[in-house]
Length: 378
Image (cartoon, rainbow, N blue to C red; front, side, top):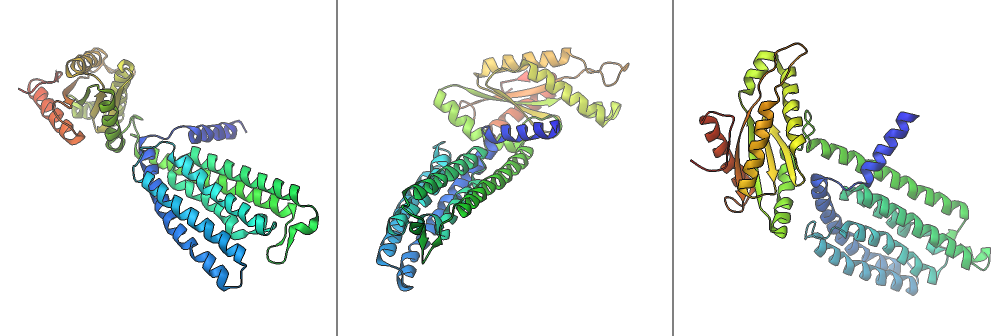
């Protein structure tokens, strides 16, 4: 029971936390997809009033349906325009999700003015709640799913309360077209909304875990190349907005293949973890360490080139001073690294160019004897 409780708490914490950069990028694409789907669905809704009129529906129902369809189409275009500006508005997934749920509620309220039972027994409109909840899975943010689910349940519960409160007699809850409204059926629908919310939440959680794994190095737990590719454009935006410098340091451990050959790959993995721990202990706020693969790392620093060189060289000295002991009783092995540092925007303006410039300096450091950091070309 204790393990299960801890697991539930871990899931809740993950769902209520802000997603990482990769998940936010995926969610932004999902928001755009939802916006496009909303436009298609909204256009199709324009057909419903026509179908209603052709199949003997009342003029009032047809006009209500037409008004609702026009309203939905106008706002569908607004949400699409906002979603095209990816991640510009952090509130957009919450606002558009709330709109999807509230639109269904407003249509049900309009129907109630014509036929009170239709507010609770119109299954077509009620399915709008389900769509609002399910579509949050595309936004890849557990907070959005829980928010929209809770809002949907609250709105429908309030609608149930109001309809039963204003019904003067049980006869007012009976309709030849929509059937009889019963409290039992309405409670069941509320339970179904809870179930849809929980299922969608679990789907989002699984997506978050899969995406998190794709952006995290399995051995060290550091962000990997995928994370860097998604995170770096946002980091550049932040740097430009703050008016500060950004440096990229490309780090490569010296003669690491010899470590693997002498003490084995398992000890080599422990050596990598030893270096990562040493680096992380010295890192400051505004610095990120990324593992590109093998024994190669990238260190991002929001500092000028000279200060960044001093930071990386200090880390180099610390790694060299902390020798690695592969096994109990074994001789300590020296670990060193070489690095090349490049700055944005003075020397390059995109990730590929920065890494290429840093790699040239890294290779120069290796040719110059290794165990050194270079921030200038020869």
